[in-house]
Image 1 (cartoon, rainbow, N blue to C red):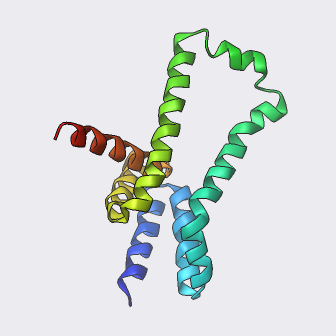
Image 2 (image 1 turned 30 degrees about the horizontal axis):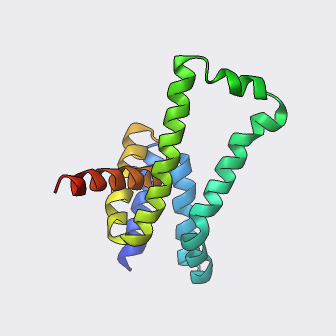
Length: 151
């Protein structure tokens, strides 16, 4: 049996054991595509999955606006409290980090295994969410830029 099957099965089992069904579903989908030999679908998911995920995540975030739960008035109110200003700043930082993360993943794919390990550990052992690799790549990018600045 090839090592990638064992690795994916281990991730699936760890995610089930860690009660993180998001990762379990994702690992299950990838493992099924691999076992069935759907390489084209697997490659398409690998190449386009981040973009699809961002679209779905963004759509989910916009639903409260579409439902009227969040109005233009409540969005303006976000700038009137310290929590709102911190949240706006955090959102700005996360968006910039995510964009930088995408660029880092494209230019330095060798960082991907470390990001996967860190994200999986955060998800499985600390009940984190699997959006970590993109933001982690962005934070890695920022840290590398700071280190390069001081060289």
